[in-house]
Each structure stands twice: as C-alpha cells, then as structure tokens.
Amino acid sequence: MAVTKEEEQSRQRDTGRHVIVVGAGIAGLSAAFRLQQTGCSVTVLERDQHIGGRMRTAAHEGFRMDLCAIWLTRNYREMLQLLSDAGLEGEIRHSTDWIGIVRAGRIHPLRLHRPTDLMRTGLIGWRSKLRAMALMWDARHATTLARREDVSAAVYADTESIRAYSSRRLNRELHDYLIDPLCWAFYLASPDDLSVVNLFSEVKLAFGAPCFSFTYGIDTLAQHLAEQLTVHLNTAVTSIQQRDDTVKVTWQQPGKTAQEDHADACVVTVPGPQVPELIPALAPEQRRYLSGLTYQPHIGVHVGLDRPPGPPYTAPYVVVAVPSTEDRDLNYLTFDHHRAQGRAPAGKGLVSLHFRPTWNERHWGRLESEIIDEALAVCRRALPGLARHIDRYRTTTMVHRQRLALLARPPGGYRQMQRFIENLDPQARIQFAGDHLSLSTTNNALATGELAARATRVALQSVTPAEARPQRVHHRGETP
Image (cartoon, rainbow, N blue to C red):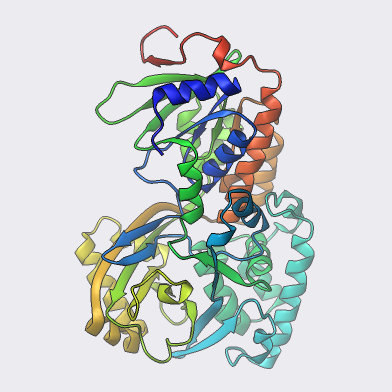
C-alpha cells in the first residue's frame, strides 16, 4: 500500500515508537502487523520486488501458481489466529489433504487427516504398518514437549538422523515408501542429512488435521497484511547497527543514493545466512551458527493444461510424492487445480513438477526453455502416462527458482539452534525472526515473527521515542 511521507510522519507522531522490519516474508509481515497493532509506527524493507517470501502466488495467463509453499493445515494454530485477527476468516477455503505415493508405477492414496488410512493402504505391508504405529507414538511424545513456535524443548531427541532412526526403530519398507518421500517433499533433503526432530515434527503437523487454502493463492495472508503496512520493495538493507538508544539501518534502492534510517528498534527476518553481512556486531559464535545453516534450492516447473489429467489423477491429490527408489530426480508433483477453486480456469488443469536439490543445482543456471525440456523428460521417464497428457494439453509453462527455499537441519542442528537462542538478549533493540529460530514451516516462521514483536515491545518500554530525536532519514555521508 502506498503511504505518503506526510502520512508516515503523522503515524510516527501519533505512536511515538518507530520500528524497522527487514524482510517482507511471513515472519516479517506478522511481526510488523503485531507491532502496528500496539501503536508502533512500522516500516518494512524488502529487497525483492514482491512480498511473501515462500508464501508467494504468481498470476500467469489465467492461472494462479503457488510458487513454493503449498501446504496449510489446521494444526497451524498461530496462522489461523492471525487470519482471524486480520479479518480474513472469510477467505479460508477447505483444501484437499489427499497425497499419493508412487510405488512400482502405481499411486497409493493417503488422507492425512485420517491417520487410519496408513492401516488400510496397499503402499506398505502389515509389518510396516505396525512399525508406523511406533513412529506415531514417538512423534507425539517428542512434540508434546515443544510449542509450535519454539521446538527447543525437543532437542533431547536431536541425537540421530532420520535414516539412523528408521534403521533402529522402523524397517526398510516403511522408510523407503513413507519416510523417504515425505522427507524429500517437506524439506527437499535426504533422510540421511536430516535430524529425526524434523520427522517427528512433520508427522505431528501433517497427520490428523484437515487442510485449508485460499481462492486467490497462498499469498492471501501476506498480501492482506502488506496492504495495512508501510512496505518498501526493491529496497536492499546493507547494514544494521545499534547506536546508543537507536538502531541505524542503511539501505538503498536501485539508482538512488544510500540512506540511513534511525529507529527505536529493528526486527531482522531475512534467512539466517544473510544476517551476518547485515549486522557487523554479531558475536563470532552467532556468526558461525547463522553462516553454517543449509538451505536447499528449489525449482518448480508449473504447467497449465487445457484439461485436467484423467485417471489415476482424477482423485483429489494435492501432492503425489515420488520415493527416491522410484526416480532419482523427480521429487513430487502438485495438482494445484485440486487445492482450491481459482488456481486454474474452469475445466482446465494446473500441475507443478518439483525436483531434488541435486537436479536443481545442475539446472540452476540453465535457460527457462532448457529447464522445461529437461523437466518434461524426467516426467516421461518417471510417470509416462501423465507426461503424455502434459505433452498433449500443455498451454503454458512457468519456471520459478528459489535459492534459499527450505532449511534442512542435520542431527545436532536443533541443539545448535537452542544455544543460539539462549545467547540472544531478549530485550535487545535488534530482534530476530525466521525459520533459523524454529522449524522450516510457514507457521513457525509466522510464530517467530510474533515472538519478535513481543520482545520488541518489551525493549521499547525504556526507549526514548523517535519523535523526540532529530530528522530520521538521512543521505549516507550526512551527519544524523
């Protein structure tokens, strides 16, 4: 929403507290919204040309394509509460929670809000089904110790990889045809490289609750929050420094002179590895933690179809996962026309192909046309029937690349996170939010934004209001 300088200054005079939020993903927007609710003047700075981060939807030739995040469940209580507080309950739409898992060319359906489907599926045998009950028990026990916005209480379980846990507690079939495809789909990472805490949290969040979405795209919440805030896009923050009772934020827009903005506090919500370059005063151990985080790259190839695929894809799958034993490159597919009305025009289909990080890295710098050709070749190899339908009815295709898509925490990663959080000053004027403080889900990112807003309000209780200081915005090189 465009806000004039006079309106922004008036808002500052009315509230007396000014906070800068760096990053307009869901963590930054939720922090900004909550701070503005308490009377703070908030400015959000985003270096990209769009808001939402992973919660982004693109309109393309009559289709609405969710580009990264796709999965919203009613276990996301913080998100549902924010939707209510923002007046968006009427925008919520029921969404299918059917997933399919490929085995020997056949798709086996599961409805995630009905865990009993695991007992009826032909995907795994009865011995594996009994082992799955042990998994459900372990996941429930581990995650009852952790709040959704803070999983640090579950670090006691952060002792082994998912692969090691499967070998010790489950069996090979259950690992290959349930654990493996879900890990790749949720985290874009191999079970060998993920802490078992990821698996427990994934099972707890995914199973047992229906899903929801929005007619106009997964970015509905982000767009609505941004409309109520002062958001500057295409604005690259280059430095954040605490100076006495202010925080100085240096930022620049293309073709313009760098500027310095002095605020009472700042909430930093960019991905962890980008934080050290922005805050020179970070302690060495904080810098090591953030720089060492591993984010997986994501490429999505979104295909608009003149008609939706026929059987077996007429079942309301939102995701069809492909185990690594079935194909080395194809990770999962989304059938976006099933997710909610409005993703595809009436009578048409929208299918998206998603790949494993090794494939993404190999194709990252390729031309979009080359990526499309290679993606369809993989589909012909893994799911030839679907590929024939795509070849015949494809009307439009779009490629989306996101370099820092999902955070993959290895064994011990949650203990490192806990140490990082414990060493943060809860009353500092620079607060952090994002999935480097929790699980890599949209709901957890949102919840850390709200926690940062609360901590910022506490810090501001002893801060002199910005309105009592000299002019707030200066060209770089001038004296504040």
